[in-house]
Image (cartoon, rainbow over all chains, first blue to last red):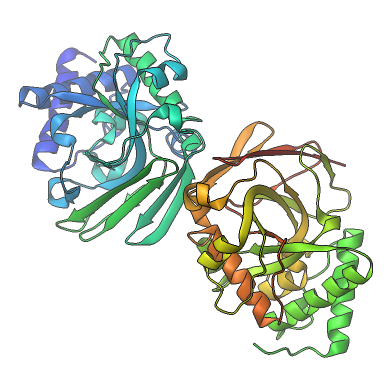
Length: 265
Length: 265
């Protein structure tokens, strides 16, 4: 696969993102894409967003739970890049008209106070370099028709990242049990699911260490101040106009998000 | 709800359940013979069983709530948990080997248990009342064992079979409830070093104390109260996991420590 093809596939994703449309999965096109090529397509997709004026604000980690890894047949996480327009701040209301086929995931976000330069990074380094953790929702979205993704499709599509919101509580990871902290998710006031930090790679700090080491090998910077969405601790939640979600992390606190606009696909 | 069984039938079915429990063999579910058996009949058989055990010198030390997760109640088409009694003969210490030779289909669940310091009386008992009357909470592993063949399951038969109660292990770290946010306590169940189930305590009726309150109200329906000093298990946070000789099970809880047991022949 040559550079031109990689660029044109990245451009295709960027165009789908701009027009809120979906494209045929790359893995159904007889292209035989490798994971490495999929990340190159992702880089092109993100480069187009940066050219349009956005900046890199962090990373997201995906494919961190056993059920999702089994579904995709991949036994390690993936990652995507968080850009400045993805953070929905203020009242935490998500406009569904700005997304294609969104679903919500409850997670823990890490904010770094020091660079994490892999390889050689352990979970202990992650705790040391973390300024604070915060409960959050990632609203995943797919530019691939009907979410018919294989691992190469989702990696190329920036790990299916959409937008995210952060809670307004910040916790010191030295005072928390990241592995055993419960994750309680309510949808419209009713209990939706419960989980625990260990659902993410045994501990969310393990997922962040994996990311630091993977980025180090790829030569991608991982800087102080970046936000890392460490991986879903809930099932994917379908959302539509008027829905309200709240997640509550044991020892830390809550994050709330509301949805407005048309019904989700 | 009314009882439909004659006194003779209650005694006969109680003897059938007692035989299955004490000699570890499977029996057909009781509703095969009495299809119109009610929940009240189930509790009448369970009460008969409790009286017999106490006459034989077993000491009643508390109660357990079962079917306390909404998902499980919905699945069974019921709107209240079932309850069962606990005696000293069912207790096993943590870090011990639990024999499976005297069990039929043993499965384990992790739960939050309450030890009371004041008596609780229904009807109208609330979660707040339970928290007020609680001495301390601690983690527990419950070993449930359905004595019915082929996992053929209905609520009336299960209630008669003492809510599938078999063995239980209290341990870990006792805590005062006012130092904890019980619903967000995370729990991980590991079997032979691998995580097999995860959840948070809110899975039990949004708050484990709500399950204990319901238990007290069911006791009131039966003309009973929960004495001070009772040990009460609030119901499985996670699904039950089958165990066999040689298995090593650890339940790890946020803020409450862990409980380890092994299973032998």
